[in-house]
Image (cartoon, rainbow, N blue to C red; front, side, top):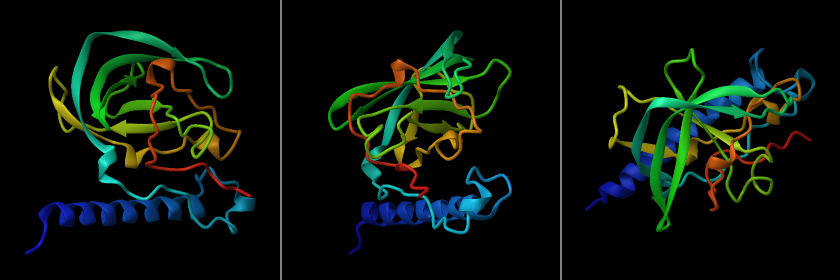
Length: 188
């Protein structure tokens, strides 16, 4: 008899691998790739942690009806203003955490979730990583959503200094190790 959980995990890992292959192809060949054209011939894909379903966590939503502005420093030292529109509360390895989600004032669609964790500067990009959550419908207080750290990615500034990227604010610095998503870029 087959194990439905193991089958779902295998299917998820295969889907994630396919998404990663697509991203690697974009970085290798696309004109808008952040990889410098002189380095694309040697580029053989991004470094990723092994897909791990433990880092797909159920989070409880708190919506901020009157979003508070947050100034985020950037890699180019020119701050950008975002609105803290939502907080995601979740449990990981028995401990409780929260991440804020942001949008710029004129944005709709994806919720921007920049973060740092104990892998930052070690196994992952030294300025932190990003996630984007795209809910199918507007979020309400108490809604449950999946926050999938396997989808955590490096900002374009990890590959080229020509990009300016927001730095995760301190409220999104997690005091735990999250070995999921993209690892430190190896562009040598």
